[in-house]
Image (tube, rainbow, N blue to C red; front, side, top):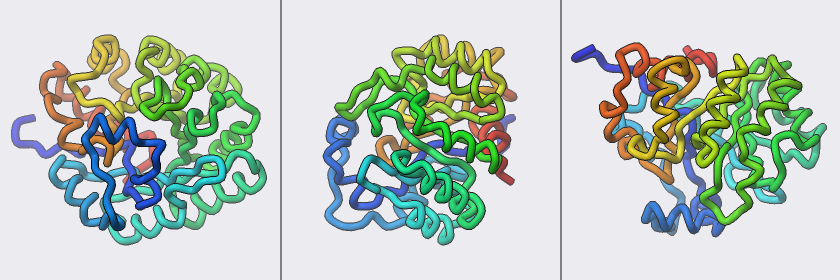
Length: 275
């Protein structure tokens, strides 16, 4: 593979609005990453430049909807994608407290805005993904043929982590076997649960966002090398971690050429139905 330029797709990123990056809920994460709050809107060129520095071909950039708080709107994501359609892919979000409005908005995200996935984070809503309010979202994603993205593992923000137990997704996948689920942030300290659920269910996948390569748990690395090579995809969680930083030490993982290509880009390309 020497000299071959690999396709690299970042499965979890945000272009931060000022509302997002200055929200106090992220103070712990920003402290760890030594991230300073900007005083004005971050230009989109900053995100594209970071992608270039990290060798990223495409990034899936997400909206952020929390209870009574839209940190990044679907229309803002759509405007970012419109400016760089060959580099950015939209991921929508919705307010799960209003099920019918949520379903309508998911349809708009996919049919009108061209988004490839919907992301909702249990810790933001302080409820597990088996909560009844998630189920209309799952049905809409199945109907429209797009992936449902979520977070697993402990939370960096000072919010309850238990709702991020990967085992909750076992019940979701049993109820919605057609639903493609991409579970981000590795699932630590329950990584073995994440691997078990992804192995059991054909349509459950893991992305490595929020972790640099040197922090990947050993069981996950073994999974990526062997029977889980089609189940794990790269994610950064930009801007909390720069893509170049997230991919440092990639060659220390011991992945063969096929596993490396799958992890860096081909799995995400297949799962999110990207060209």
